[in-house]
Length: 286
Image (cartoon, rainbow, N blue to C red; front, side, top):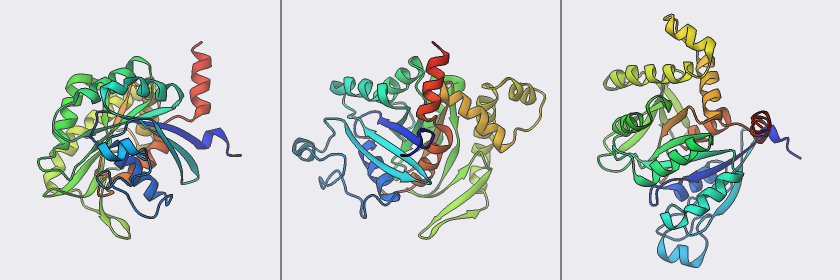
């Protein structure tokens, strides 16, 4: 039997039509649970299997699947996005250890995304935001992040910037490692941080350090003393904040084209608490 520390129970939540089911499909594909990715329009995804869901191209009920990733078991709960099914989201979050809020890169916060974030913050549910559909025309990651920061202030912690070639996401810049990567069929290769992203990198990196430092007294002292935070210190501060929904990491990708999904899986393992940690916190808090 797998030890509980090696398990992550994750709900995929957010506004309807922004790619939760496609994100689940890409995650299952990356983990080799399935050998080809289905499409909503073709009615052949793992999570939308009901005849009504296939006919209407929407999720109607909760669906569950699991995968193995880097020695961890991730249990996925795909939650319908329409407001009529809000009770399904609440039900899923009662058993999940964390939530991936899937939203679109439209430069603003959709209503469903706002409701999902508000619920997680109010109930101290660990969450991260996956800005999906970076392949869409006029997709804008930075403006979407800024809209989130304007609403939720110092809780929003972007941890990457997508590298774009027109409407195609070709890689990403990690704000934690301060390295850039380009997608290749064989994996990813390290590249120089593109010059056109330097200003965004500097701005969002500072925001990330501030969020990480705000969740640990020693890091806060170091930050205000003008000292640089190390990669491990940033991860430590983020993890502490994520555990109580005081920090919400933000990533980007395109589930339809399977871009950014591997990094999403890695961050779920790295930043979300296990059932053991969640239970310990609940007991400690009374």
